[in-house]
Each structure stands twice: as structure tokens, then as C-alpha cells.
Length: 238
Image (cartoon, rainbow, N blue to C red; front, side):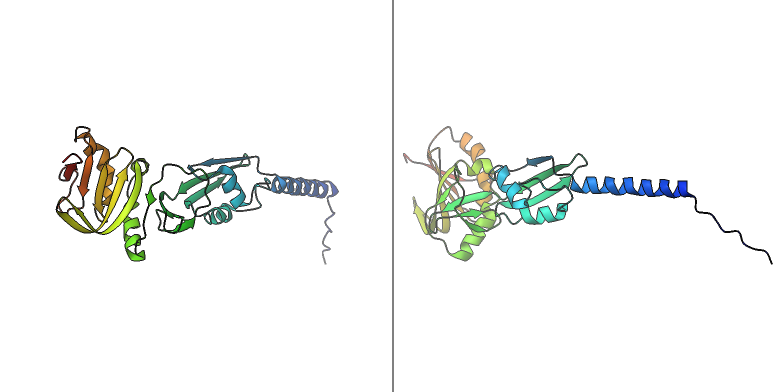
């Protein structure tokens, strides 16, 4: 009967293995403890960087691995003005946050709140928000929802040119009568009458105004046949 030889423990190899394991564990522990070293935020125009960082819960620069990108996105999305957010963590311990904000459409004077492009109506907790239109009177909730859906298509540069908005269940101007229209007063002194469906034509306001020869008056965009080249303009002097 052949006797099997007992394998001797190779002390050197074992120590080398344990040393490598120890170094790897120390390296992993070191990485897990590394704090966020830099935070880059882009895409925000109204929200302050500090507000976004606080909402994400990383104002104290915790470990880069404490939260996943998904966790951070979920926290930031709770901010009313955030429509979408993308968070990427880089190997240099940088967190990059790309924000897409909801547009502020107007200040609703009836309830002293702010209406956003996604239809949310939020408290006016914002400070120093300039250049947003003011909706002067009350609008039925269903009609307001339809108005917001279409008004949100207006570009931000045009929104900044609007001073006030006033709803009329029936509007009569120079024997032209229409129902459920919005009288929009522009910062340049012109008045625009638009129905809900034609709100998007406001994006052509500057081109339309340029064709009027610098005259002031009432621009009617509430007709079913309205296009960017087919509209009614009534100078104030007439």
C-alpha cells in the first residue's frame, strides 16, 4: 500500500497571499471612505447650486459611495422646479449633476402662487424671480389646465416679454367678439388677444411685430384661421 505524502504548508506563499489580501482590503476600505471632492452642477437657471446640493444630501461632502446616482436623482427630483436630472459619479471623486428645470409660466395673482410648465402650482417661496408674467384674475381649473398645457409651449425669451395676462370669458374689441380668450399685455406696450389653441403663435411675436412697422396696437391671434402670416392687427389710434 502506497502512502500518500502530506503536503507541507508553504509559509512564504501563505504570507504573501495574506499580505496581498490585506492590501486589497485596505485599498477597498480607503476608496469607500473617500469623500466627494468636487460637485459640478449645470442646467439650473433659477435653482441655486446650494439648494440642489442640500436636496441631494451631500452638503457635507460624504463618501462618494454613500449614495448611488439613482438615489441622488430621486432626492433632487423632489424639488418642484426640477423636471429631470442626471447624476454621474466620476473616478476623480467628482459628482456631476445635470438639471432640467420646469419653466415658470406665470405668477397667479388669485392665489399668490407660481404656475410651472408641468402644471404644478407651487408656493411663491422663490426670491428675486424677475421677468415672469402675472395672471391677474381667476380662471376655472379645467380651463387653466388647458391654458397651461398650451402656454408652456411658449419659449422663455417670449415669456420674459410678457407683462400681464387677463382672462375674459367674452372679449369684445372693434366689433370682434370671442369667448374664452386671454388678453396678454406685452412689455413693449402692445396687446395680444389669444385663445388657448393659438398660444403657440406667441413664439412668432417678434417676427410679427417686426412686420408692423413699429406700430402699437392689438394683435389678434384668436381666429381659427390664424397663422404666423395671417392675423388681425388693430392700431391703438384706430
